Length: 67
Image 1 (cartoon, rainbow, N blue to C red):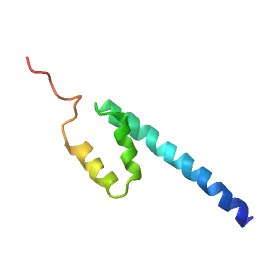
Image 2: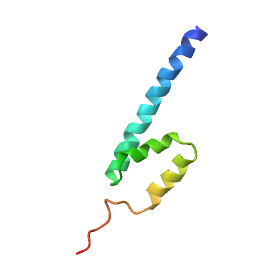
Image 3: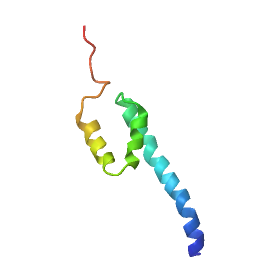
Image 4: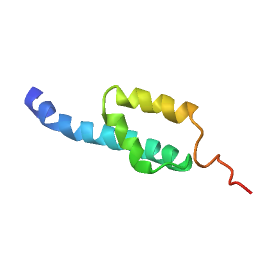
């Protein structure tokens, strides 16, 4: 039984990764950034830094064009 669970572990990890990327891609895209930035959630420490950058920076979508 234990060996069977060990073989399903990568599958569940892949599902968890996809479930994490989909909403973050959508949020980053709605903010006006390229959705590929959401892939940084897989890089340790960088993911926390980028979370704060996205939270406290001015989003491209919020910038108003100059008249």
